[in-house]
Length: 233
Ligand SMILES: [Zn+2]
View 1: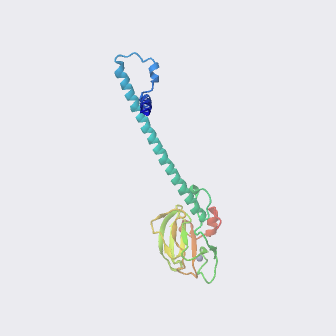
View 2: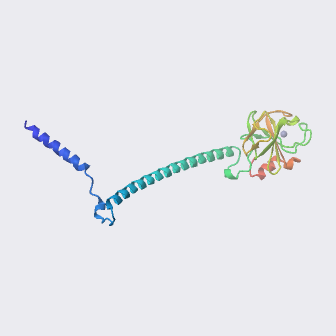
């Protein structure tokens, strides 16, 4: 019996605390004189409603901005990843500068410099019109410069040959390929796959025979052309 009043007192105290917590805090605005307006009660209610609408609108705008910021970040990340990937690809083909400035790359990631331009001998009917790059059969050949694929065909001693014509009219010939991965009429960017190294046509082993023919005319030394483009073949 003696513990009941104490327990009841505790309950009263808890209830009193709960009521005190649930009471609205004194409003700071209460000390600010309200402007004298007719029908003040309705005006005040309308203003509070307006504040709530405005707060909701601001919250919505904030969410929208956060979402668009996140989208921008995602796009920037994707662009950064693409740029890093592009840089790595170009570096594989001998170009280490700004990807946005690239004009030319080497045709193969790894090769042995073989027969040079202008050689004469029993292997060639006339002067050797290109530069040979010894490489493993199946090695990826990439476009040394951007242009339009103007021919993909077997062409006698050149074997499977892809011709890419550059915007200035220079023809780049990729010869002796096993496979071509492009078709005539297609545009290729610099370092895009063209085909794979093979030994088709007049060839004694897998290699790329590269020719550079300004304006589609007589061939020039591909090494000179690559060096003029800032590369070190
Ligand atoms: Zn050759």
